[in-house]
Length: 60
Image (tube, rainbow, N blue to C red; front, side, top):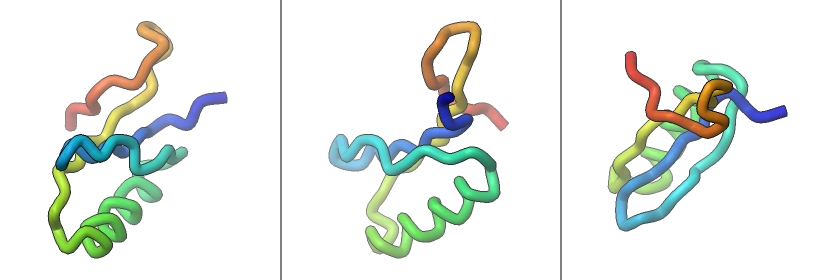
């Protein structure tokens, strides 16, 4: 089964940071990734869509 969320870094075309089940896990990963990259990142959160069978950008 797919994880519900995917964290993706657009900075210098890095790619996927990780996959997570909850937004709490995503927020923790964002904090950790920001620290690890000294803020040199451009993160987007994507959510699994059953309709499209792919990850789509999550809108708040």
